[in-house]
Amino acid sequence: MEILRNLFYGFPDLWGGGVAHSVMILALVITLGLSLGKLKVKGVSLGLAWILFIGLIFGHYSLNLDAHLLHFLKEFGLILFVYSIGLEVGPGFFSSFKDGGKSLNMLSMIVVALSIVTTLIIYSFTGTPFTTMAGILSGAVTNTPGLGAAQQAYSDLRHIDAPSIATGYAIAYPMGALGVIISFAILRYVLRVNKETEEADAKRGMGHLEKMTLNTFSVKVTNSMVFGDDIQQIRQLLKRDFMVSRIIRCGSNEHDEVVNGQTVIGEGDILRVVAHPTVEDPIIALLGEKVEVADDKFGTELITRRILVTRPDINGKSLSHLQIRTNLGTNVTRVNRNGVDLIATGSLKLQLGDRLTVVGTELAIAHTEKMLGNQMKRLNNPNLIPVFLGIMLGCIFANIPFFIPGINESLRLGLTGGPLIVAILIGYFGPKYNLVTYNTISANLMLREVGICIFLACVGLGTGEQFMQTVVSESGMTWIGYGVAITMIPVILGGIIGKYLFHINYYTLLGVLAGANTNPSALAYVRDQTSVDAPNVGYANVYPFAMFLRIVTIQILIFVFG
Image 1: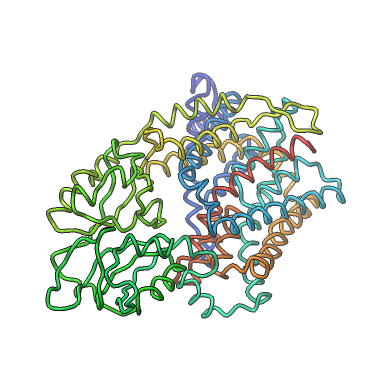
Image 2 (image 1 turned 180 degrees about the horizontal axis):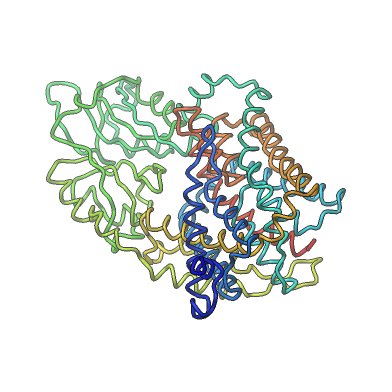
């Protein structure tokens, strides 16, 4: 028993200064938390939040870490987490504001603003300390980086820690995860949703998905006005982007051929077209009529294959620069990047990890594979230089002071905002300047999960004593009510605004609302309700900007009201 007591309470005689003891406690908290995180009740799980709760329990019983080590690990874990998020969302951060993404991100901004307004109203009428309200806000929207940002901002402002931030977060988090799902159920009846109609619209790419999805369809050329025109002329007439991947020639001279801008079309030819849903009707109206043709009718000489870009020297080069069609005789019809399909226009710059859909002969595709790489093994080795270089630059950027009118204190982005912004910029601009920033999804996820696990465990261990006293008190129950209001009011109002003002498809709308609350559990719930991909597209489109807003706004609130 004495050995076990020493093991958990870290007697220095046994542990030589407490480092081994601290690491053991940290690992135990994370292990128990991850194990409990696998539990689900009707498809809903608290996930990594269990690590925080286990840490709170350990902290309550004084099973704690060395104070200096606790502080270092908490900050380092937070840096790893936010930086890996920035690298992940960086490539699509700025492009998410194009076309239909503008309205989706505008709605997410409204939802973020509504949650802040709700928080400030509660703060004004109840007199609850703002540090507590900041924690409740972060927990209510299930935004762990916001928790870290609030703690860092308060520490920079007052040069002391505020345990009540983590306490408020832990109290509000469970209902934050569940409240969004309850709000979705309420919205379904408030908006009088016809699920079949909404699902059919989502499949056609309607509801702000028109520029985010690609359709493949066949068109028979029957309009005599375009007989003898080439594909480039058709594109100039339409003034829209599309690709023709295959063609069936009318008459006795049917044969496979790689289609390019100089390919001339004639009466009765059947074209296989790849385009956004909004472009489909104009193409059909100009060329002739839509027909259903099986893939094998286009011949067997040309094949379609997905090729992975794995050669670093291809990173950042455009398709027109590579001249794949001219030099190799293959046609790139679409590029899949981070799960989103892009039309393979000549100006599109390739990035490591892109998956290209290529049409051509077996031999031509083999040469294309050699040019692009297509060797997954090359991507298995993580690119650590941009990771540690970016973290270094992020720490420098974090401490650059700036001023906001009306605030006397000089502000800093801190160890949350600095690395996040640098990571977004590196993720977006890196490929443009031939800096390889790609890491496999598993490598980036490992970096992110390790960081957040360490951070949550340290937060729980450091605030456990105060949490247990608060949660059983009358104020603790009141805080839960505040969290429910901050969770549900913005989601319900945002859903009504999104449907009636922005006319967003219902399933896309739910994905946007889940993304605005950075709530993966809510997204998983919506995905179980439908077979369409609209929720994923909506979530992925607003998540980067919503995460950025949550991290930055919570710091501004702390500086103003803290």
